[in-house]
Image (cartoon, rainbow, N blue to C red; front, side):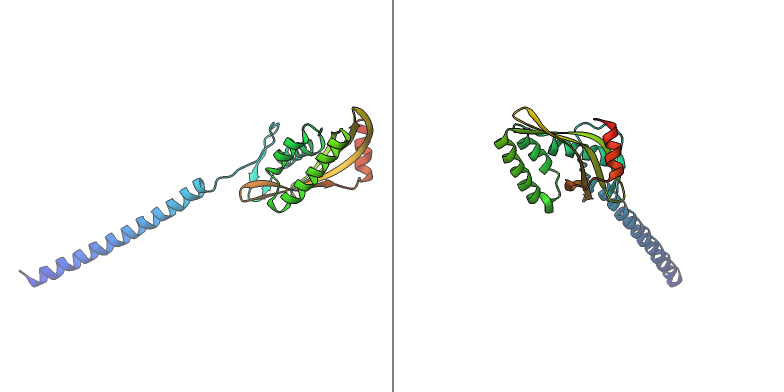
Amino acid sequence: MDDGKYQEDLKSNRRLIRSQRLTIGGLVGCLFVALLIIYSILGAQKVIVTPPHVTESFWVSGEKVSNSYLEQMSGYVAWLMLDVTPGTINWKKDALLSFVEPAEHGKLKIRQEVEAERLKKLNASTYFLLQQLEPDEEKQQVFLTGRLRTYINGQETSVALKRYVARFVYRGGRTHLKTFEEAPNEPKNVAMASGAVR
């Protein structure tokens, strides 16, 4: 065998093996990137809690949700918390607690249980007539203004203009209610709401 031809074949085979290694390395890299993309698409499931009746389109992106989503969710939360009777408060409490932020779950549960006892003791009902929504997409909160009607034994005992704020947090692909509390009435908002419905 010719030594020169042997050396030339050896160099040729080494070049071929080197190019095959680079090709295989590139393919493995592409496969890894493809697997990461597939995992990000399939592995990152989003659970979006929505009100039972969606009336407008909305978007969810990163850690934010749209104004229309905030409006619909805050209306649903107000219905669960403020439109209650002794017969409905327990199941509404359970529905509400299913999407409350974990850090606030215990506090809100106690608050709703105390309210349930009070309603049952007085045979009271409350109804909230929503008149105005003021969403703040940046802070992920909504101010709700309306009239809270209270009935005891079927008789209306009070009608009060109330303002509430609902704060939401979108974390881990899921929307949570952070807080729902009464807010101070601002004069311009009270005037607008007072003129809307009497």
